[in-house]
Image (cartoon, rainbow, N blue to C red; front, top):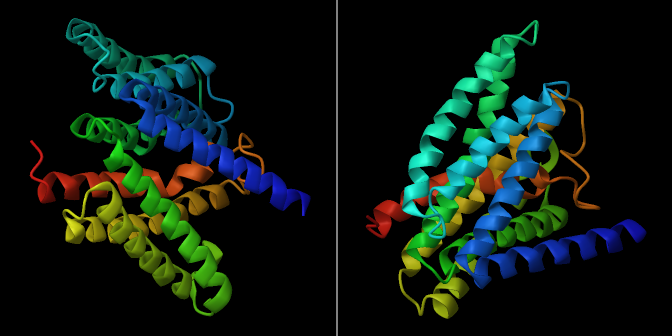
Length: 271
């Protein structure tokens, strides 16, 4: 009972912080994105290479934050001419520093240091780009609503009807019934989002986006489960009591949003 209360309070606090950051303004969402990326990358390193040089971890996280900063209006354009070469130099520093570490698997370390930039920083960079197209933050919020609706639907349908395992080798509790239930609740959420946030416009597109979110969000969850199983840990971190780490909370987001972004660029003819 105590764990359930802790999990509920932690989940509600997370929900309030995310919704407030998205709706408040662009700068706030950028700030929360940087925090999420920094903590997520830190968790990623601790899972795979806990003994890596702290400077290398810091450099990799800094690259991720600089990447997001390219698309924030508060950053003066003249500063971007400094940030770009800085990021290039930092990328070069990762393998150079590894030369002096005397590691048995230097290129494995380099790959792991670069991977979270792609896996964690780029999805949030794309989110900040999306925010620049919709300064009210409704588009980004709609995506998160689909993620949450899919999670709730998958859990409820899985608990009530789940009999056929979706991917038992990676996640024994997930079922096909939960998977399709998550898609169903995401579609319902898309109808409500279209009606109340976008005045009924682009209903078909929002429904497609909700399906993409549910499908690739589930795959993102499975990928994170695979990662944690490979290093024999239950959670990516302990920052959120009852929920685990940042990566545990955003695993669906990391894989789903890049696909959603590509679809939105095509469907909404964004240039």
